[in-house]
Length: 106
Image (cartoon, rainbow, N blue to C red; front, top):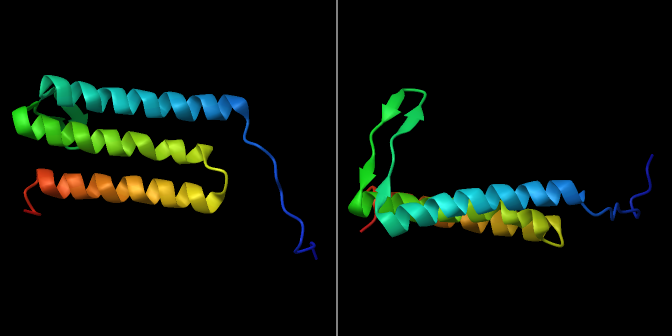
């Protein structure tokens, strides 16, 4: 039976850290581009093509993408609990902006 007092304090691989930062940077940049230009191009979904978004809809989409893109940065937290809180908070904010964008929350 393993000892309950031992903890594994290994740091994540630098390549993994770089890739998580790159994923985050890419998704946040797409969100910022949608907010600044007020345009989100057409996207392919499993149900077919989704049309482009304009004006306010594109801005809400961009803000949601920014919060989703910030979630992988939880990988840089010092503890697993901190990473969970960070990712959970980002996802909660993303859901809130999604509901505001869909006009489900006034």
